[in-house]
Length: 193
Image (cartoon, rainbow, N blue to C red):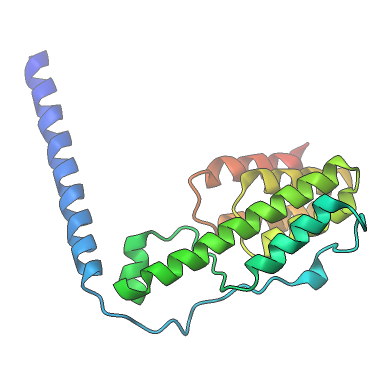
């Protein structure tokens, strides 16, 4: 009896996997046949240096390097495509636009990583208010780094800014992350403590 139940479960799992594979490949095949489409609805990100503490630690070589890296990145187009697969992009914009979109998304990744290293550096130097400016800018451009949201929530909690934690929660609820559920639990925990 046990063997029959096990065989049934295995067959059911195989069928489910086979159906998922068929759907994936059908969607991928459809995506590979989409012609180039307009990119008019794409929201490009322009690095807004007025929102960043570019005057923090004047003469510091690391800060100067972060700013230089951001200037270099901002010379190209930047797009946040978090949560979208290559198949999604091909379906929406066509196969021919995929290399350009990937390049723009790679710039976004470098942008977020540079901002994260800069805010970490300022945080370590005890310049938390300047680090928070960078983190808030990261949130505004759609960074999805969970550590960023946790650090900001901790800062807001310490400074009695619970409304700002609620804003972070709202931002995370609108994201498509693998860690959304656990991150929301963590952020809501800052409100309960």
